[in-house]
Amino acid sequence: MDDYMKAITFNKPNEIPSRVSFLPATWTKYKDELETIVLRYNNIFKNYKNGDYKSYRKPETYNLGIILMNGVVFGKTFKMDVNL
Image (cartoon, rainbow, N blue to C red; front, side, top):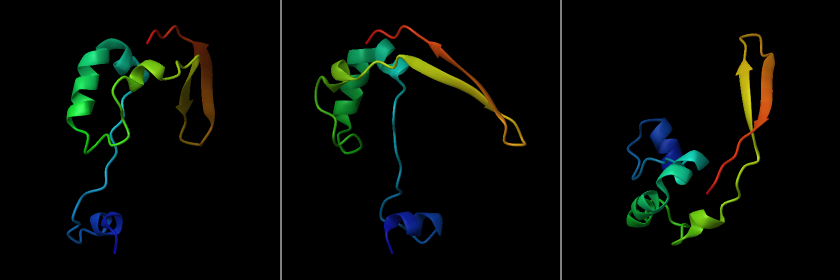
């Protein structure tokens, strides 16, 4: 049984599967400080290399949506200036 199945069945996994990510706005605001943390914990951020955040594609639009209880989605797409 893999760790994912052990975790969801409370069967003593060796590691608890998890995922950590940061919104583009977080990289925009904290840049080098956040990179220091990400590089320090390379066991969590295995594929990150020094300076990677500088090459991230800036999102041109964000979607804002509200999902109602009956499953109808109302949303709006808007442009934001994001400077990385």
